[in-house]
Amino acid sequence: MMKSPPGPWLWVADIAPAKEAAWAARHAGWLSPSERARLNRISRAERRAQMLAGHVLLRRLVAASSNVPADAVAIAADAEGRPAVEFPKGWRASIAHSGRWVVALLDAGDAATGVDIEFRQTRRDIQTIVKAACGVDVTSRDHAYSVWAQREAEFKAGPGSAAVWVATLDDHALAVCARAAPVTATLDLAGDGVARRLAMMWTTRPRLPAAAWAQ
Image (cartoon, rainbow, N blue to C red; front, side):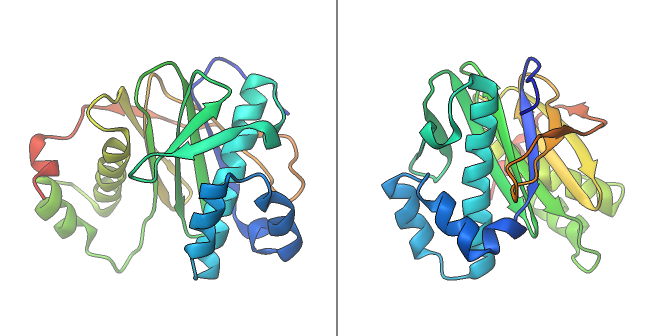
């Protein structure tokens, strides 16, 4: 795997391999009993692939950052379904998905983390939604999706979250709560190959106003 620079890290992967029966069967054994139970409760094939791909991607990221085997990484979930790295210790993590993409965020220390990715749909009246839900005046559809992704990332991180960073990836909005702008890379889950770094332009943002959490 790529040599990991100081974090935080954000890895991105296509969920397509997780739709293949052989890949899914091989990696389902990595999951904890609670993760497998949750996976088995999901009836929609794409949603199952998103969950499995996300939890495998996070384990690959932890393994690359900790020098432990990916199948030895232990992931639990809190009451809200947010992932927690139980082994090795010392990491905070978050997972998100949108369509074919899944992302995993990993940061060291105790600062709360959160990530979200949003496909920028052209037919969705996202500007009106953001105005109503967040109390934020947005200047464009892209700005609105950025704010919406930020809201979701902040929600996952909770009140103890660190700084907020936003960026775009093709036709998606990305937002993370982490100590710094994350080092971003892609991983081909099909071959579990080398993570390749992405050149990203991250911009820091202030936390959203209290009105964003009124509903």
